[in-house]
Structures are given as C-alpha cells and as structure tokens.
Length: 306
Image (cartoon, rainbow, N blue to C red; front, side):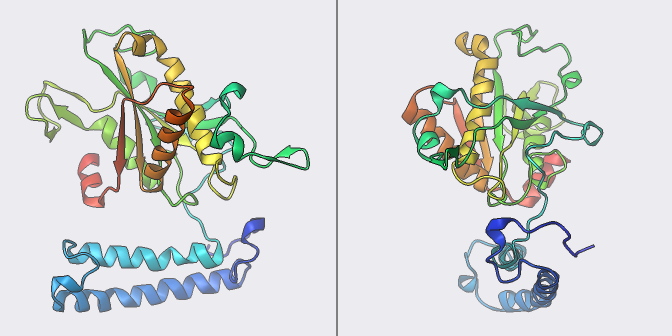
C-alpha cells in the first residue's frame, strides 16, 4: 500500500508534500508522468545526434535510466520519501539472512574521537548533537562458507597468500538503501565475494580451477542515514567498523598476511573518501591498503550475480 502511516521525520515537516494524503498524491503523479516521458525520451534521443545526449558515450538505455532516476528521486526532495532503508538501531532478523551474518560493533574509542568526529558532535543543552553509538554490520560470507580458512586466528592452508578484507559502504544518497543482503546495493559485496579472478589472465571468470575470490571477507556497514543522524554520523559509524576490522586482523596485518580495502558505491564512495581523509589526518589507525570507488552499471552487476 502506497499510503504512508509512519510519522514524518521532524526535519521533513517543512517539505511541501511530506504529509498525507499529499505525499501519496504527489508520488503517484510523479511516477505516472515519468512513465509517460519514457517513450518520449526514447523517440527523442534515438532521432537526435548523440551530442544532444547528456553524455555522447551513453547508449539509449543509459539516457532513459538516468532521466527516470532523476525525476523519481525528486520525491525525496519535496516529499521526504525514502526506500530500501532499515532502522540502524535494530538488529537484523536472522531468518532474513542467507548469505551474511549480522553483528554489532562498539562505538569508536573516546581517545580517537578527534578532528571532524569531535567538531561535528558539539554539545547542545549538555547533550551531544550526534551521539556515538554501536554500529550494525553484515559480514560476507557466513562463517560456514569459509571452509578451512580462519582469518581471525591466521590459520589457513593457503601458504603465503595475502587475504583481502573489505569494509563496504553502500550508496543511496545518504537517505536510501541499506547494508542488508536484500538491498540492491548489496549486489556489489556479493559480486566481490562470489566472483573469482584468474591469476593468469586477470579477467573475471567462474570456471577455471586456479582462481580465488577477489575479497575473502567483507564487513558491510549499516551506517546511520541522514534521517537518523546528521553529519558526521556516517563517518563516525564507518570509522567504528574500520577500527574494529583493523583490530580484529591486527596480527595478520602485522605479518603482511592481510590487507584491508575500503569499498563504496555512489554516496558510499564519497563516504569512503571522507573516512580515508579522517584516517590520514588524525593518524589513530593505519591507512587502508586500497580504495575501491564504484558507480556500477546494472548490467555489470548482473553479470557478477550470474
């Protein structure tokens, strides 16, 4: 049912269509007019020369997809509509998890709450504007999928192979989506875990026996969206999980048997950069071994899934 019975977030009250029934009416008309425009865009951009497209390199499907997304996302700006989100203060329902395990990570250590993480949480009436809280995350893959490899203890049968551990920050404009495995953006950690990379050809394949997973384990962060915490809440949550991962694998990292990679798509990529800059500027934690910033096309992601 489209009608939204949930209370309006206080910071959405000023939006012109945040209250029902105006929210439903606005969303319906926006969706209907956008669907009507799809064949118009298809005809227009198939007849006009490519330099009339937003980018000449885009094919017709990309042009339509971007135009469609821009119009639909307007419902967030004027009606406060969000989708695919979960309450970050609630643990995941274990019955909903098939590929991941849910875990809580404790808040960032007080002595590390410096820089933007201190400046952005100034007290108002004796309380922190943005409190430090425990952070939920989804661990890819489930423990039973590791076989005889135990990253935490450092006992594995892979000789000198270096394990790659990822911290994934999902996209969604800081107000949509989730780290839950059912979220659309979870196609990315799923792909990085499932897809194997040929050591000889450096090409994606699923058939050669002499292959390995791109990442061996991924911690997908259920950071607080803007509905739940203002900036720098997202960086606080990301920093908490990164510090947890670094501490968890500190022995292997010291032995150069493990590397930690920050991964983010869309707004999550922006968050990766903000986190990496905080790590660099404050110096409390070692720098990540790499950044993987993505704006992934749907057809590539679907190939990863298959």
